[in-house]
Length: 268
Ligand code: DGL
Image (cartoon, rainbow, N blue to C red):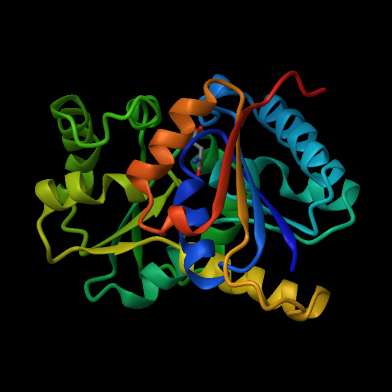
């Protein structure tokens, strides 16, 4: 049995934890939500890199065998440095533009992500590896993360803001939309309301967890008969809110796991 750290700026990475509990329920997890500092996507590259590194060091110090950087923004800005400084497997998350280009029928793909991700060298390098017969309509989802963080994913305010962000993607005729921030899978309902059922939504949580599984198979071939491990939820803002949002947003059966929620004090 392994101890896996899952880190995000806030509740977004719960979309990855959800998939991890579905595929790998036997392991123990520490989920770290830096909600006091969300959104990361509108902060400087230097700040994001330094904070992500400190929090990953903290998770490694707790004995994690692997860390999932369940945040596209932190992956884009910090994964290289984190991997040089922390000697355990670090699994990142990137916008699924490659599978989107493969699945799109009309070669018009919308990419909704944070401003920091869209501006990052890592994202643009990935974009440059793809054939240029596919058109990508990039849109920063400014303001969406705070709404999701405050439990308003399905509110009128979110629908209104989202409608504005999706307009250029809709106008371009995209048949595929990349959810390039781990918070955005929680907007599926709102997106479907605005864009209908026919658009293909791409989120990479399944691929990320399969990558985690491969790393764990190398590291720690299964040595336990226990069916369900524990889940520790750590929040830098409000642990009770994180717990209730996890219960609301996730489809995994949290009741089968030993779940605790704690406040994350200062981390340097
Ligand atoms: N959930 C994160 C991502 O995947 C970050 C959102 C934010 O804090 O701006 O990019």
